[in-house]
Image 1 (cartoon, rainbow, N blue to C red):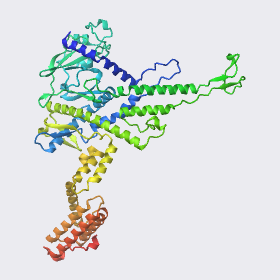
Image 2: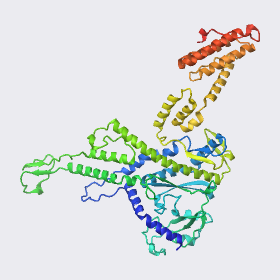
Image 3: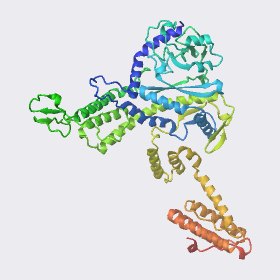
Image 4: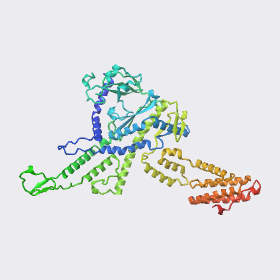
Length: 623
């Protein structure tokens, strides 16, 4: 037996108690624990899905930490570089992640593991047989053997990833693996444990961990051991630990010329050191689920008893065999039906109270709860009480989200390091509605990579309301940049659309001026073509463009068709009327500009024949 397998036995011994808890919480979530006090066949054996309900309500919040931003993460260059290259790197990373990897689906599974068991694990590697494509894998904590003294992968001296293969998938491994028929026969599953020929293990055998009864399944231990130069990986099977399935090799992944561990651990909480310290909703709501299941069983039993007719008699009945107690039958002897009194505390009130406690422990408020505690007597809770619970829950979830986002940053950093280390030859990506190419000089690891968005960004409606309120408050201030607040509000509505649909004020004004210049060409064409005035156009910019064009045309002595001149001033008047309704202050400024232009045109001679120069129209005709 090799030394690594002896160490693996020690790690297995340390985690047996935790593994028993994991199996219990898994059973509680899916099937529920069987009722132990059931003595009658008619008694209920229900399952209150308290843990499962809390997990399903919490997952959108946690997944929102990954996907609620405009991008998955922000890239801030740590060396001199134009911002467009950093943005291109972030867009390229988004494209690769969404379209060429399974990270989103795997994170969903990892979050589920984290919420139930306290930890979720993502392993990100590359597949050399598929062009070094990034491979993301969510690992069930059941299949990650870690010494209890370790806090995380960064400080662990060793750990084991239990990998499960089918015989066919094991044969497809590359040439570095021992895939001979003789080896496969020794390491594949076998239902007859006594004939396996494995060494005696002093710990309890675990199906799927140390052995398999399925002959088509192969269990592999990927044993990571810390060394002076990083980590060395040993690969063997617990069925035949003496066989070296692959030569020991070092961790190949780098980040800024240092080792980068491909495992990222997400923990539900941070309360003390130790791999098994974080608690999930399985442990936090264990007692609550048992209590709610007990209440529902008692409720069902009570309904069964209360709806079963029971009779009593004032005197002894001589022959009970002839008594049928059918509906409508007359029975002598003073027989009376027994009426049950209601329980002192209604079952619904007890169940609502228990659910309220569960929601508060799990930090997931439930709007359907009508009684936060027994003091309300089943009445709706007050607004102050609701706000208090909501505020406490928001603070707690915000703290947990910060912890989760720090781990996300580590995951994004490692995955970008894989892209830099195992470079693609095709840097084409799709973003903001068009094909782009990543500049090769932007492909480096000198970035500060952080998750995009904010902890509360998962709630789109609340985020949009807040951003619109901020935009209305600050966008009109003289010392504020309105473009910043408008873009934030657009991003809250639709982050990807904002990347393409947002136009800075300067560029938008330029586009408006160019569009108005094209309209002037139509108005002065032969014959003139009337241009339509739209209320959503920037009237002030277009009015300024018309005035500048009229002034330039006057100085050049450009001949003007009277019909065209009439259409231009008519267009100008319509815009002035719309501007007066939309922005009276801007209308006043535009009127002053028109008066100044009239005075300038009256004083300045035209360059051409006076009969062809532009005749300014009175303000009363245009405003």
